[in-house]
Image (cartoon, rainbow, N blue to C red):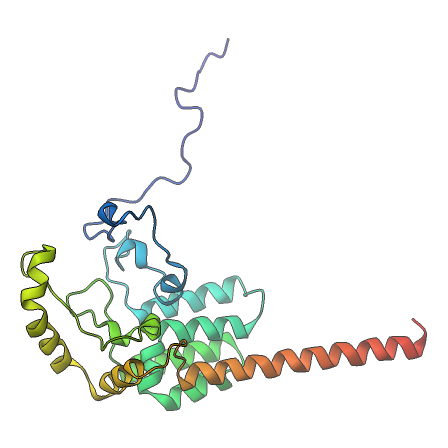
Length: 237
C-alpha cells in the first residue's frame, strides 16, 4: 500500500493566473457560435485573450510592448524561417505605425538582424504613432491590421446606450458621426479605400513590399538549389 496516496493523481502543472478583471468576450450562444476564429487577430495582438492586461503585473500591454517582448523571444528562440518570419510578425504588430512612419517601414525592410528590427521598433515608439488601443475605450478598429478584411462600410463604431440590440438602431447615426470625427486623415483615406474595394483582400503597400521581398528570396533559394544539383551532376556525385 502506498503510504502517501496522492488525492489528485493528475494535478494541473499550469495553473490559471489570477482572474482577469477585463476578460475577452466569449462566443455568443444567441448567434449559435460554439467558438471563434482568432488566428489572424492573434498575429496582430498576441494578448487578445488576456484583454491586453499582463496577468502578473496588471500592466496594459500596448503594441510597442508586445513587439519588444516578441523580439526578445526571437533572440532566445530564433524562428525556423529566420528573420523573414520575425519581420512579418513585427509588421503585423505595428502595422498602423509603419503606415504613419513610412521611413521606418523602409528601414524595417532593410533590417538584417533581430537587433536592427528592435532598433526600428524603438524608433517608432519614440516618434509616436496612433495605436489601435485594443480593449480600451479609445479602441479604433481602422488602425488595426485586421481591419483590411472589412470592405463594405467605413469604420463606424456603433455604441449601444443600454447594451441591447434595440438601442443600437436609435443611436447608430450619432455614434457613427462621432467616430468619423475622431478619425485622422490617414484613417479617412483608409476608410475610403476600403469602402471602394472590389471584393478581394486589401493589402497596403508595406505588406506588398514584404511579399515581394519574400518572393525574391524564395526565387534565389530555388536558383541556388538548382545550381547545386547541376554541380553535383557534373561532378558525378
